[in-house]
Length: 368
Ligand SMILES: Cc1ncc(COP(=O)(O)O)c(C=O)c1O
Image (cartoon, rainbow, N blue to C red):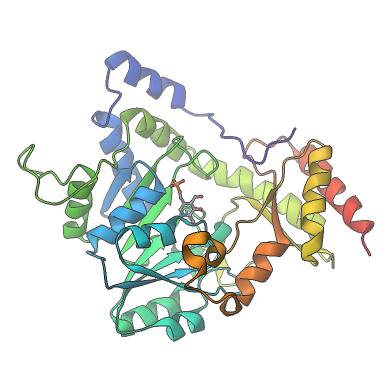
């Protein structure tokens, strides 16, 4: 079976991990925590980076650092992995779902503007499936409305929006290092920001609300959202190889894109000319939604693991009652017609991608 995504450890991961075990620094203290944060901040060109146990907890910390809570509304795209909506809800605020743009698959600025109310405090902008959201209009609307901007960069680290790297355009940005992400620590996340006061709040909230000056003096109701030194060791080694990871992944994306070009039954993930996306999960969109599940079944028969795209957030049980499905035509259309193909960084040479594409295209050729 060709898996959908396998992590790849080609750098110093084993050596750094061995150091953690041999020195006993396996919890959330130890040199790799600070080194990973510093290296990540340096690469992003941001002053502060705070490692967390996941992107989900990073999003929660970011919202809490901004003091978002009951009575507030936070805008969030409808086509995203569900964590941003769930974390808004966890703070007691209301997630306000908006439809997406058909090319970027990020927040549609017109839908964002239409969703503003006097209670809107913030927006979580997801850079979806490797592609930046259209930040200039989103930031302009946020500025006019006095909204804070959290970028969710889980799926698009290093993508460029009009020459600027995503994650540095809003107030805070959150990253994921889950095993199927472009770089991984197993589980893990990061928040980056520019404001020293936010950095301090993030650190206090991450560690049980404990004062940074006095241990066991708790100044905020906090959490344990820390990362271990072992995860940070892996993260540091992955970060050192991130450029080479992107290069290999881009080569893979080019192979896929070439095979699906100019086909009326299937389209490779589109890209706007104002950005440089990164390649996360290989994503294709079919002309007809009813083809998706039979195609996935056929791929499975051929030992190729595919995956349907995530469902729109408004369809999930906690959000269904508050959201009329007719408000999300683009999100629904993309979600129902799209699927992911194997995308591991180490996915062989062109031969494996070739076999995957042959299998997909031969099946589609038999459709009416
Ligand atoms: C856009 C987005 N946000 C958040 C997450 C949650 O990441 P984690 O698994 O690190 O909590 C994911 C994970 O897939 C994601 O794709």
